Length: 171
Image 1 (cartoon, one colour):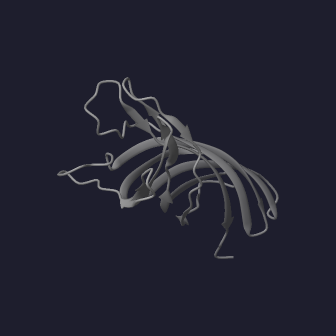
Image 2 (cartoon, one colour):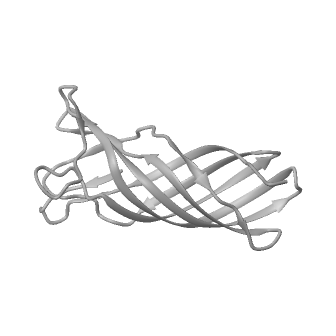
Image 3 (cartoon, rainbow, N blue to C red):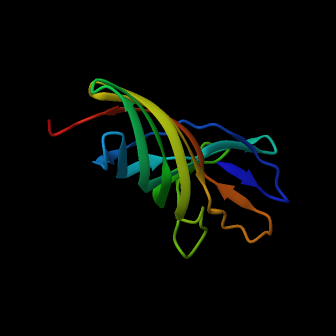
């Protein structure tokens, strides 16, 4: 996550998350396909504020929609894809400097930890061999997820991902 504030200095770090779900392959021709899907995806960051360490790990239901260009044979193909995503925060957790595990709150009342709705773009490349796909992708959230009322506060998702995918076909 990228975090910016005019009154607090963040030192964000990388956090490993997981995603799983289903991506549908809708071929348009031999080399081009639409790829809508549904994923459960954890994102987040580890960060420091004045030497105090925090972990912030929201979980989203994500609806990616990408287009893919593929080249190669039936057994080995190179794929390039790009598109967008919509996501909605359904849970997750944060860990404060004292080690307290706290579930995230996206509600309208009380202390909110972030805005639940995110939208962004993504792109990547992969190599499919037989029934497996190894891919790398990057996604960038476009919506400010900060609930702070301080002008200039900004939090956005930014994900570098590596995926191993099992490919199923009707053949």
